[in-house]
Image 1 (tube, one colour):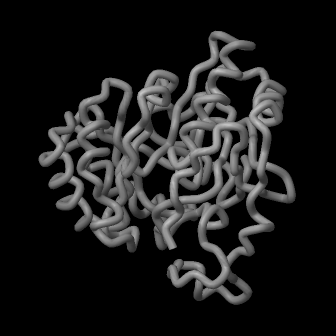
Image 2: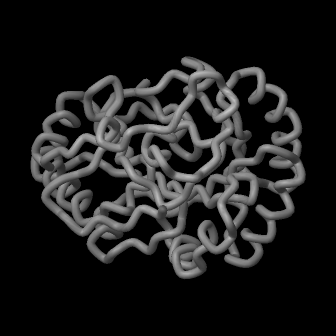
Length: 261
């Protein structure tokens, strides 16, 4: 079951966490903007189903077939869709964002770009009130931005999924979208590596789409500090060798696997 793009522009489907829409003030923990204070708006729904996803409550619904690494944990089960999605008016989301004194807004998910019309309206609404605000979007790189969405976004944090995500190639690799992002001055690329053998696939994508090394961040996969510590040691050496940027998962180092921080 692949989630389809939502054409409605008056409401957003946000992730529901602890009973409320997931909008929170923290620091960016990954990639180019790591360490920058930001307000996160987490949308629900995704068109991929990564086996190690740490926000699977945005897509791993009851009665779907998708496997997840947490399946082996006693008590883990898929999510009731109606309980984990908050349908929010644009003005409601804008008010929640503006309650924090912060100019950097990160649209995350799930896959935010499934809801481009509504997000364009949210960005326009916020900029009318606070003109200095800037927007980043975290995307899996499978959807081409609309003209209006591209005009509104300041930074694309593109995280193309590799074979280690468990997604078939026909779902995770969309040439039209990747060519768009590779040619955009707003885009940077973050690849998640679980093993050193993932590097070959990363380099194939970099070569095929002609992505400059200065736009590439490599990040270790893992939701535990011990896992990240083990993987960063060989990943840093890869970055040094190929002139890529290294990204840690700063929020995991600070808060562990806790959500909404």
